[in-house]
Image 1 (spheres, rainbow, N blue to C red):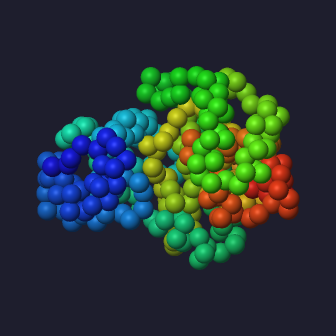
Image 2 (cartoon, rainbow, N blue to C red):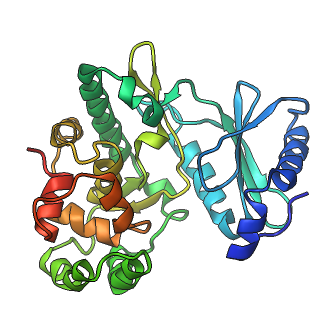
Image 3 (cartoon, one colour):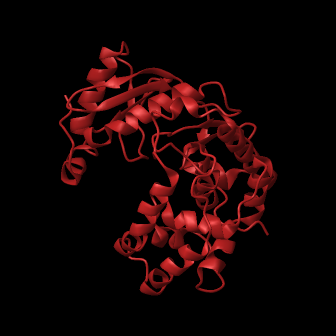
Length: 307
């Protein structure tokens, strides 16, 4: 029911086309014993995700990203019931047609934090920040050994070397201004990063868009989207946290760090921002506070400082 997706052109033609994707989703939900349940596609996200009735979520992974489906299923199974915030429970996972994969999981309660944030009172925003920090502490404290055969990268130092080698080209492709590009190599060379740190389970994209809240009490009710999970330095996690949860607010970032139980130097987090798999500095510049001067050190303190 779903065509193979191997190229960017096939992705663009298929993944966003409901006339193609929905029949496949309906066929698969029927095969999973949920025939007749209403399907509602979530507008967010890069891959097709459907609410199936009011109890399940079906996530589809196109051929080229099938490994993400394996990752998410393994991580969710490992996490179930172990964090202070709910994560989806896997009901079924496996291969579909033409290399596609799927995960059928529980539908978590709550509202998306990104949409709800403007309505959250200030004191509750502070408490939510602390709850995020506590959830990350619990995530990183878990025994990740059962996932070492599933998650990458194989070696942290090799991963950093690959990311470092392509950093300038990636940011140039995203149209970062040349003065910033010219300063990247020297800045990265000046920041000591652990070659082989203690490797913990990382979500890697903890952001308001991947958090749910109970609007009655303004407490965290869910954390989802573990397809980009990996094993690595805990500091790497705080790139997305600083950019997309606290969003350059030092008070919120300080509360997250306090609840986590550890702070990281802003320069280290800035270096990891440049080395992050999904790094897009021009986008961050549009979304976040501007630094007082055009230096990487000033930018690090603006986005990852704690006041």
